[in-house]
Amino acid sequence: MADSGTQGGETLLFLTDEQLRKGIEAMFFAYRGFTADPDRILEKYAYGRAHHRAIHFINRQPGLTVTTLLSVLGVTKQSLNRVLRTLIEDGLVESRVGRKDKRERHLFLTEKGEALERELSGAQRERMRAAYRAAGPQAVAGFRQVLEAMMDFEMRRHYQMMKDGA
Amino acid sequence: MADSGTQGGETLLFLTDEQLRKGIEAMFFAYRGFTADPDRILEKYAYGRAHHRAIHFINRQPGLTVTTLLSVLGVTKQSLNRVLRTLIEDGLVESRVGRKDKRERHLFLTEKGEALERELSGAQRERMRAAYRAAGPQAVAGFRQVLEAMMDFEMRRHYQMMKDGA
DNA sequence: CTTGGAAAGTCAACAACGCTGACATAAAAT
DNA sequence: ATTTTATGTCAGCGTTGTTGACTTTCCAAG
Image (cartoon, rainbow over all chains, first blue to last red; front, side, top):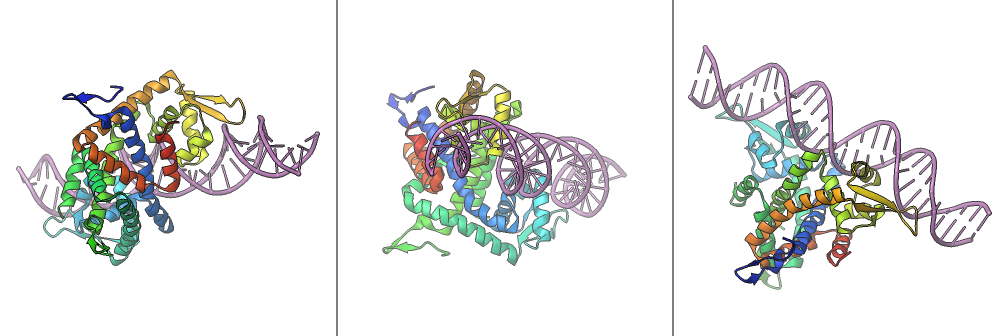
């Protein structure tokens, strides 16, 4: 377990513990960069990452229900509710009762919500764009392949659904 | 800004907003998987991610000072101190006064600390190994290239230092 | 040798955001 | 008619981040 490991006689150098550790640390350090820009913007509005995540996915899939959002975000309804309430109170998110099923609440961004979404995703996209550009298209393909393989089953399901349109 | 963008006449399809959005969501979903296994283990010991991070980097660079760890983790000393205190009290971490500079505290894992470190990193490595194996060596290279490019300057400095040995 | 500042530790208070448990309401489904 | 589902709300708690204030230790420069 401590060293490379072989398969069919071929040494798999990229599977050494050292390579894996580098990947683990790369994830840690990169994720901080990934959230740094939005975090700075959110401070201005006294919101946190939870607000950002809610806004992101409501924008991504307008009209999604609270339950759907809950399962995408993987948090409890109490935790999400606290965030949604402030976003609705502040006029960034609109909650509409379902036509067919009146228990459901369908979530939409208001104009104001869309404005914040653009500000947040703009900053995050800029960093991602710079990273993509620096690494090149082939690296980007690999980047996404590894990340997809790292996801839990349930999260991959959501990711795939998002990937191929709402 | 809304579509692909061109450079030198060549269309850069991997830099479309859609591609960037996929990368952003991949990071979000993958990071949850990345932390899922350690989180489950940490629950057993009533520790959190902050404890894991401290343990990881103390193991990575035995004898590092509190200040160094502080800058690697990017948190305040008060926040780190709370975590370190419990780890020291529980006998997972040893804090030794510096020989040259007696103000400095050099941090080491105890036997018990190393045992937990192995349990945590073992689980995390397993997931990373599976993802690496599924994606292949070329994808792994790209994965790391993009992540490196995504880091803040200061974090990349730490990452590079770690990369080339303590 | 005195003093300035760095390193470390501590205390208090607070905020974001996870969690559980309990409970209420409305409406769909059986 | 009853059960289940979707949602919302209240109360309380834990982890982990923050700021601010203050102390002790001790190296190093004046």
